[in-house]
Image (tube, rainbow, N blue to C red; front, side):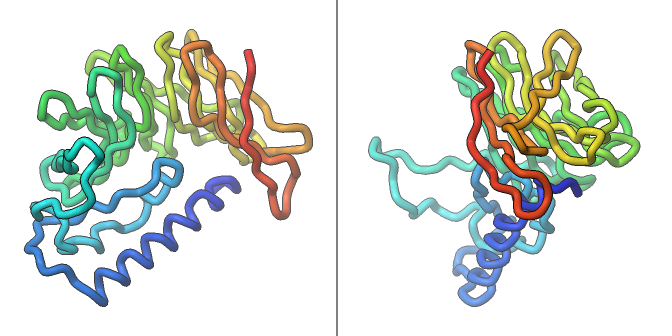
Length: 250
């Protein structure tokens, strides 16, 4: 796995272990049909852990008893795709459409949730796993899916069709993290070096956004309506990378 993702996976896996241990030592009393673990948006790579191990932790179907929001409302469960026991919502559009991923009988799949219905977005041809990570006001969805080769590729989903955005030259992995109202997509893609670089995708072309001076890795996490991109970049090469928040100005 490329270098920058190791940093993003280590912390969530430790969090998952502690969470699982807590449920093991103090099993909840409520009956369960599955378990939903809420994971921070910035550590979504934890999806690769075997979360089926959380089955029966007593959260699904339980009456909400947690802290209320200031307006008095409580969390509302969105459910899972058929055959699944967990799901996670990762982004929401101004009109309320929600996207994320849920496990199914055949693997994790990206979903769209609208008007009380969760819809399976499927995968790229030959793939078995997909995750929706962002969407714009028009409902165009982006994320990543495995392909027939087993590699993950960034996708764009619109009008019922999932499009493979490809990778940077020499790479075999990409992931789309955000899309703005104009349809410009940003994310990360493996470069020929084998390390992730931030990219911008527009008009059918993926552009390497580069890194901070002296760095060799970067990820674009979001883009605003004006086309300003933000994310993280290293400023050293090899060894212990130092990562810093960055903005790519047009």
